[in-house]
Image 1 (cartoon, one colour):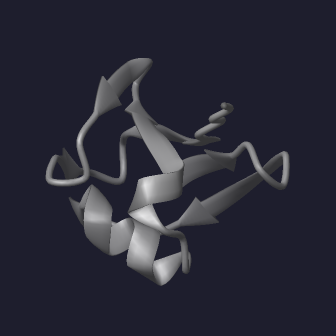
Image 2 (tube, helix red, strand yellow; image 1 turned 180 degrees about the horizontal axis):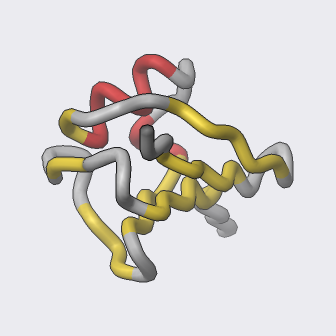
Length: 67
């Protein structure tokens, strides 16, 4: 069975999760705010409405803003 690997930049950790669905739902499962992160699937920036599969390599990057 193939399990999705997810890198979470904020904690600098890799986790494995059995997930197929839209990116927004993955963020909910991980208790992350979609307004504070960027989602990268297979080295391509995606929106939270994009579909994810277990075979995807996913990175969740923190948004940094300054003023």
